[in-house]
Image (tube, rainbow, N blue to C red; front, side):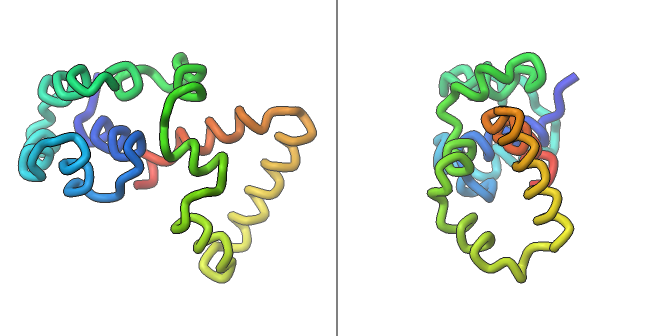
Amino acid sequence: MFNADILIQKMMVFYNVFTISELANVIGVSQPSISGWKRNNYIKAIANKCRELGIYNEIFGDLNSNISNFQNSTNVVAQDFSNNSNAQYMQNIGNKSNIDENILKLLDTLYSFAKTNNKIDELKNDLSALLPKYM
């Protein structure tokens, strides 16, 4: 049912880190431990660590049925997306030559529809939920 790789990606999104080494530092384990969890699909170790950190529901919860918890969570990526406060994201957005034109048009269209229908928060949640898929 669960996949260690996806759970580790969710943890990386939750803590707004980009490498396994960064995640290891944040959660207080060694990088080889996380690599072992991933390699051996060791769900129990991930679950135990998430319980210890108080993030079990955020990581193991179903994103579709738990969207309100995600929206109200302290998820740093969602906050950065919402507040445009992350320098790396702003650098990419500021330099539009690095972003495919069709993707920009799609995002612009999504934003326009969301704004018209008062669904900006829902759009933020949907886009944030896509992050683990493309990491």
